[in-house]
Image 1 (tube, helix red, strand yellow):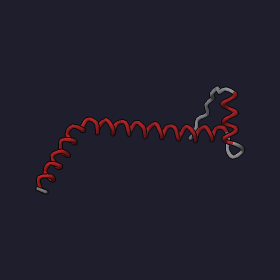
Image 2 (cartoon, one colour):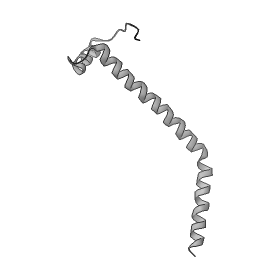
Image 3 (cartoon, one colour):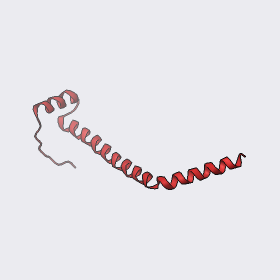
Image 4 (cartoon, helix red, strand yellow):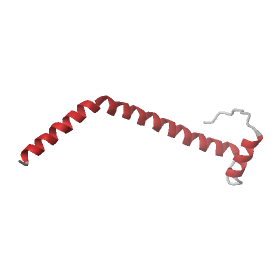
Length: 78
């Protein structure tokens, strides 16, 4: 279901929308598609930021484990 809304845009923005949308789709369809992509991108960026924070929080432990494994592997080769 869609709700009707009204927004105010500058002439320049409308001209850009019209140019990019062309005759293939309405302004509404074009704006909705652009906003959907933007919202997906923002959601993905939030997930990536949370993941990076988790990695950074565990970095000291992970680095220590990696160093321990490398030390073990080096001592096995001697």
